Amino acid sequence: MAAQVFAAIDVGSFELEMGIYELSGKNGIRKLDHIRHVIALGRDTYNTGKISYEMTEELCQVLEDFTGIMKTYGAAEYRAYATSALREAKNSQIVLEQIRVRTGLTVRVISNSEQRFLGYKAIAVADEEFDSNIRQGTAILDVGFGSMQISLFDKNLLISTLNLPLGVLRIRGTVSALNTTVDRSKQIIGEMVESEFATYKKMYLKDREIKHLIGVGENILYLFRYENGGQPLRWVTRDQFDRLYDELAQMNEFEIEERFGVSREYAALLLPSAVIYKKFLELTGAEMIWIPGIRLCEGIVAEYAAERKFIKFKHNFNNDIISTSRNMAKRYKCLTAHSGMVEEFVLQMFDAMKRYHGLGARERLLLQIAVILHDCGKFVSVRNANECAYRLIMATEIIGLSHLEREIIANVVRYNIRDFEYDMIQLETEGTLSLGKNGKQEDVRLLIAKLTALLRQANSMDRSHCSKLAGCKMAVKENQLVVTTDSSEDISLEAASFEQKASFFEEIFGIRPVLKKKRSR
Image (cartoon, rainbow, N blue to C red; front, side):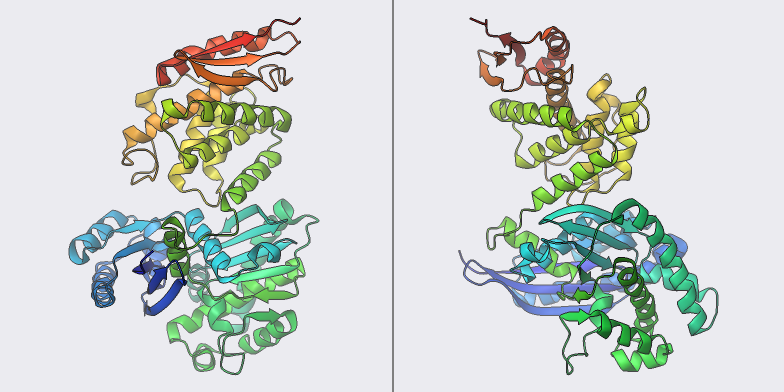
């Protein structure tokens, strides 16, 4: 495979960054250049809700310069992603259009879960032993400018993740408005962080032991970039961190600027970052921080390189998505035996119907997650379970899924036990979708209809929650999906439910599901 030059652009809350990379099957990913420009987009968004005209002008000018650099290197492809500053700005569509018209760049606003997922991919590329390093109690702490993400891994799997409104730019904005001393600022930041962590501990930590901490984000990079004889530290012990924290806590912004080699504006953000890490270390008792030194650009290029077969991840990220979903289902007391049975049925049904539904591996994953979570609404209300499930899924981030993919899952679960109304599905998320034809809402609605039909039919097969049809066989024959069972039990309830759901299934796929029971000898 011939080498290719690729550009990754991060339109962040505090910086614009571009990485230029050479990709090849032999050498994988090789960085050619890295360009940064400090621009506090997040300050506008978090303070006023909009990105100002002046900030838009600067943003477009820098991105135009980026395009010139891309051409110099002969970059054949690029991806430009924007995070929370544009995601939360009320005028984001206007700003994105200005960028497109003036620079020719199409910038995609990614969800928080997509952003963090890219970070995990970058870590996996940076660390060949990623799987072994997350085998025992590991937390990834991704402290950003707009928010922070805490993700817990155990036995090679992501078990939980939570986004907290503790971005350093937000914290700095709150504290600076108080016009107080350095010592008092440190105390106020500590109080803000502790209040959020107290809730987090009750919900997610409990008796869980965290042995390792992986520090991700620009802030941790700047804190330790000169600590190893002028070189960045990759591993930081608890004692090393505490010494640096004590030193930092006594400095004013001018001294921080000199000590850490950052701009005055950035200097104001290092103390909030250090406080967050300090409090999390105290919360978990972790004794070591690993700093892989990755940025979002590394995640963007890792994603692209894997898609184009330049690299292959050793870690299975789909398993993380499924694991997170199972832990969510456990939190909401879903009936695991029933869900497991329906999951087995629906995946078998999906595979048997490949020629007729035209869906791929990603859609299969979304269907699997919908099954895992389809009962979670009963935790809130048995009478209104489908609507409650919809709201729980929409309110819960699942790392690795876009907001639109989560919305698809939520709607599939909602219409599992509700009349399907094609024209009534109102999607919150506009924009492109890697699934289906071109990402238009009509295509997304059709996908929801297909997945709903599959979930309904599979769910009907365990109507009694007694796994009576376990071990059944499925095959499409003469325009029928024939489900054959040799169960010796009374399956009258399942048969009635199966027939009740069959009309909608046939309407969507043009294939009639039929349940047949072999005669016992």
